[in-house]
Amino acid sequence: MLRCLKCQMVATDRVSSTAHSYICSSCVTRMIPFEEDKPKRVSSGRPSGWHFMKEFVDKDGNVFHKGKEQKKLKGTLKPTKVKPKKKPAKRKSKQEMLLARDKEKKAALKNALKKQKDFINHKLGGI
Image 1 (tube, rainbow, N blue to C red):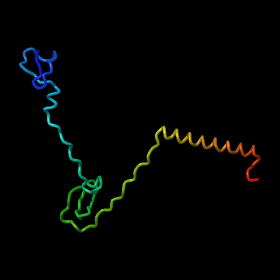
Image 2 (cartoon, rainbow, N blue to C red):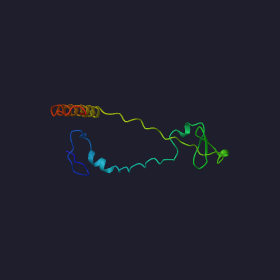
Image 3 (cartoon, rainbow, N blue to C red):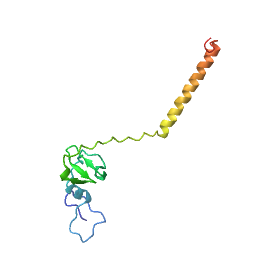
Image 4 (cartoon, rainbow, N blue to C red):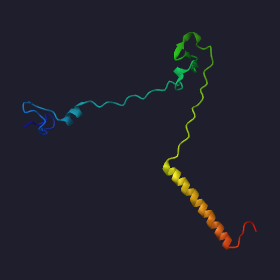
């Protein structure tokens, strides 16, 4: 019967009978160094898709034709004005739609009840 070299856990039937020693899977995972978070991508300050534009001039005056920098033209053109993207309208979820419909029905019922109370109290439309 074999035991783990690190934690003395008893080996299961998966270990060969000819093995001299073994290390359990939990000890192996503890031996692997923890990976640090990858650095987040830093924005270049250019809009998305700038390298697909026929001509793009950044705020420093660098001129690009289809993503390739044209050093001869640096500072000769005004920076490209970028239009902000329109965000698509938020779609209502099914639950939101049901709540809105329910609210409309309640308002209609409330209005109908008020009309009935006015009729009973002899308050007819504007008299």
